[in-house]
Image (cartoon, rainbow, N blue to C red; front, side, top):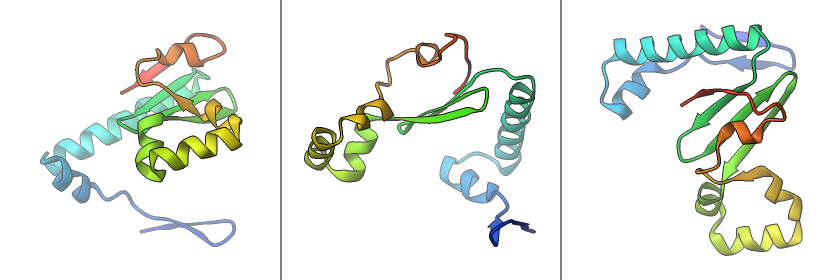
Length: 120
């Protein structure tokens, strides 16, 4: 089943079987983990909590109030574009540095309040 959204965009159902196959976990375990995480994430956002969702090897999705921002790990961007191209892009557009974060930086330090519920 899929739901329609304004602008003729379709929401596709989550493919639990692909995640199970890629992680070698049971379908039941994958469904339980993902649904539990989404339920807790929804609860935290509903209560107005600041949330940091860590996307392994990619970066951090930070939600503060109505502000949502993605901070990417340098290594991830370098793998996508090539290190030399990334360095050239940052030289031409220094604001790209604001979109990058080190994997060793505490997620709470990215928040204005310094308080974040972290989802690994």
